[in-house]
Length: 570
Ligand SMILES: Nc1nc2c(ncn2[C@@H]2O[C@H](COP(=O)(O)OP(=O)(O)OP(=O)(O)O)[C@@H](O)[C@H]2O)c(=O)[nH]1
Image (tube, rainbow, N blue to C red; front, side, top):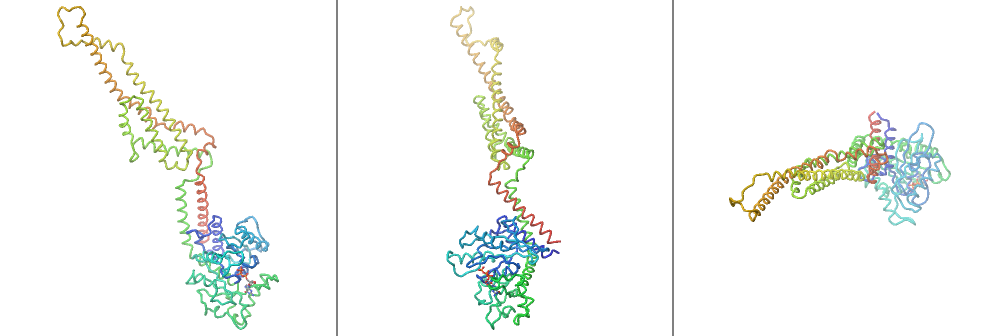
């Protein structure tokens, strides 16, 4: 079984971590919301500070006229075994306060740091931890006193502002409400009870605290309330006698005050029979026990909430991409992986395997129409289609989205490669055409002449006359024959080129693009310095910031889970 100390100590740790992350609750589902705490609520001068101080056993809260508490004070009490007694603020973690007068000054300075020297209020809490053998483990939140009128220098909205701030704390179902009510006033008008009833109608998380029992009019007492016959709450009221203003002025020691309070109840004719359930020490123990019970009940839902949040944070990290490794080897590996991701998408396009896209086959089919034009035009046409596929593939490579610099680098490298392939393609098709034309040798023409003559339609005369019109006719006929032969040959060459040019283009451009689009790029980056690799992997700064935030939060939740596992189920 976990001890009470370790359970409450755990809650304290988690709450401090929440504050470091800027999580003061109030932002929907947060870890803070799932953790129990005790808020001290009451009208001005009802004795809130006195109750807090006597639970702690130390003077440390600022005093003065008007509204002194203007920021929530989250007070975490840690019981220590040894005699050392000291305080620490979360905003000044290196400073250890042993002088409690200095603690008081720091609270008031830190309040001013946020609210200025005005009498404004702020809902950003001050975190104070007190380590002492004279306390029980407990988290208390001191809130500004509820008031009915604004004092000079305050805006008219202050009354409402304070009430709203206090309500924002006490309305949370994890908040245990310490409703401070002075016994020398009409309980029916208690601001604390009024607010507590509003946010906790069943009273299961409200503890009524009756202060100033010693200041009641002679002949009256509060037994009706303390015995549970009037203003009944689910938990019994606890009566308190704090130091009077005169005691404070005389610097009456807190430990002495506690003893005097104990004696007051033990010797009181009115409350003697209730003495074991009265006083600030008893109140501290009662709260601590209640807190333990609540934490124990909450553990399964806290763990469930932590697990859910961890899953969500991990999912978001996956979505925005994991952090980039610091060492050069790992960065090179990552760049190569990203290049491969792009190359995969590009090849899918070439193979026609990407749904709804123009495929390799269709690409060639389409290109054939270009062969009507000059051979070079087909090379260019294929080049532009490949270039467009590079652009498309880069845009479609999810992994690359977060690295704009690397995107540009890959695009540049791929386009350079395509340019080379185009040059190769151009040379090859020109060569094919030249090959065909160089095949028209002298021998070829001689063969043409050697072919048997087809007779003209008209029969030649037996005794041929010397050359005349007939010879012209013959010459004309011969030219025609050559013409038709050549044009037949050109048609044949054209047919051949129609077959060979697509082959050359696919061979030089498409096949090469598939095989070695990024080969040069790989060789280049393999030789690059670490600094240049990091530069290629630079990300959007906002994204990096977001990742750091998530990673921190994830750490908090994971360590919270580990700690809960460690204390809760031992
Ligand atoms: N005699 C006597 N005086 C008390 C008791 N509780 C508080 N006081 C006095 O009442 C005055 C106000 O007490 P605080 O503890 O400062 O009250 P508070 O609610 O914190 O006041 P604000 O911070 O101004 O809202 C002080 O002078 C205390 O000495 C009590 O039980 N008996």
